[in-house]
Length: 343
Image (cartoon, rainbow, N blue to C red; front, side, top):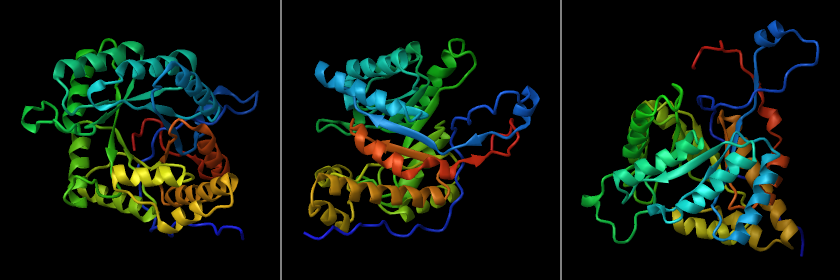
């Protein structure tokens, strides 16, 4: 069979301006550089890097997950997000993974909390349990609506109410936080949310979450750089100026992409699916998917995205393939802003 043709994402839209997400500074200069010179030198910043991880379902899978965490840690991500199920069905497993990240690695966890169907006391207990462990980053989500959900009985039907509750707990526990803040993230949608009537409604929801106290947003997956660029442009016009971190899935597994489409309504390009399904072998399939993903990420980084968030599905190899081919150093910039300038 002849080599499979690589599939390239559509050309990127015109650059957009997006606030920069925090990223680690470059290593200190060579020995002998004065402290004054180090303070005067503008820090160099790479795009923010993060990964999503699922809690394990068993002891055996937790051992494999620990190996994945160790591999991802070597890339020095800014944080790893830890997912949770609606209704806190697996919260013990969430805490298991969170404790491992905090106690056995140098990574910072961003723990998902969902609000739909939850009672206030349960949410407060969950937030406090995370803070007591040292968690300082929470991704506030509505979560998937259960089949027996009764909206009229829901105390927190939307994520913005969870954001407000997190800020309330933050104020009540200001001594524990030493006057600091919890980093609160939310979700954003370059492609219309399947439950949303319009794309403008998605923007209105994002604006409400930002006004409720969200610090940044991580996007759902997309397969065209123009979708992300358009989201940023529309969010800025509506008054949401928080960083919008684009989310990506390594596009190497056609079955996973089709399942993702069923769950999220976001469909991978037919040309990509065909190329993956007709690849000569697994090596060729990974090469095709990695190339597509890298080109997609380059498109949004060139347009000004503040970083990238990789949905790993607890498989580090594909994520590392993408990162190696991407070479984030290309987008490392010298920050010439004043140290105290929040913008």
